[in-house]
Length: 263
Image 1: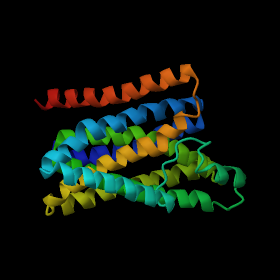
Image 2: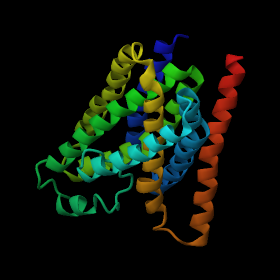
Image 3: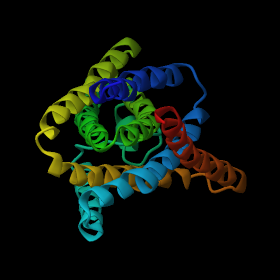
């Protein structure tokens, strides 16, 4: 399959399929499933960042110091964007960043403004994810697939958080689903635009890969891990550690499977 074909498949899987899975869980499944998905997503993101994306970025640039500095700068940029409410990665209903909105607008008193703000941030986030996936595919098809898997892993719990905010903001289930699906197409749009542009800008690939790893690390460490600390009991800690390990293992397994079928 061509790079473009893989890019379209992974972008759609990371966008639309994650939205549908999140809707099924949000509307029907037990709430504790969300915490399980978050723990797994942390492992997948960190595994992809440290075992796949960052090593490829360093190799592609040939300058480890510059690449790691780019990662550090990327983490700072994502922090600033989140502070400006342009980047929203809250994954559980009781998240500190969204708690005031949920309590204050629990009956749709804001006429959907908080929900629409989340959709604007989510659309921006999806477009950026699409660009990062495209950069990974431009470097190596196997890296692109692994990056796509990591993106899908964190998209599902993120979309669950978005659904909860939209519902609390007064949106109906069908409208919340429609808005999330519409927002998910930004990932495909970002990926296709980046694919066309990166074909003439190969020098930008190492930088974008470094930013991709920064994004994964920031989401895992700054947004997801703090939520796990709300359950400090031993049983929950063991469960979380096992699921994080499973997320890392899935990245390793994906790498081996892709290598096997590619070979």
